[in-house]
Length: 244
View 1 (cartoon, rainbow, N blue to C red):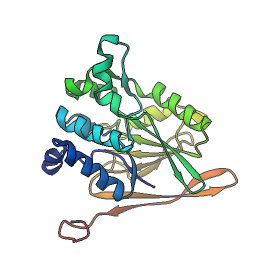
View 2: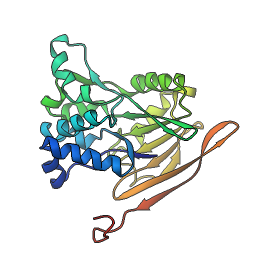
View 3: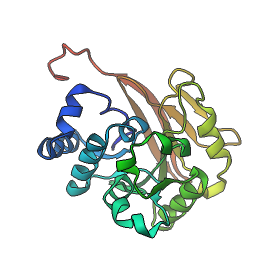
View 4: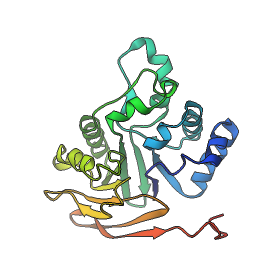
């Protein structure tokens, strides 16, 4: 299963041009699906893009049924802004995704830092709020486990280069038992740690950043699913014809 941790599309001059045009935004989403992506986190960089760029991609993704996940981004309680919110980023993202791969059911959630709210354009954030992650992540993981998810994957955008991996570890520390994810793919942590396990027997955390794919192999057993191996796969240079 190919999951996008986010921040791979923006900032990019090419993508900016594509997402300003609804037809081109649709073609970009189609390309992601053809490449094998089944879900993608709403990254901090993408949400901080100009309103037309942010909403162009989210609208195309929603129309195609391609889940862009931001678990703790939602419409607030301001009824006057409900319509604006539903047409903005919060109304276009999904709180989770469910991916079926053979016998394995993956439940996917994604966490954004609450402080990001001030960095998103007012047009995209109309009527929306970014809640503190623990409550939203806990509630959604409980729903996914009740729905039969075998493995919960958390896509974390909580850290910057300066904080990594503290914010992600703080979130995991606020979750207990079955409310914890089984696997964490974290952005902006590659300069600090490539692979670690959260304290207290917590889930394994893998850093995903830059021109690379992270490959995690899961293995099923009598006690459930566990990580058998992991590796980082660097992408070829721009001159490689397959990449082009």
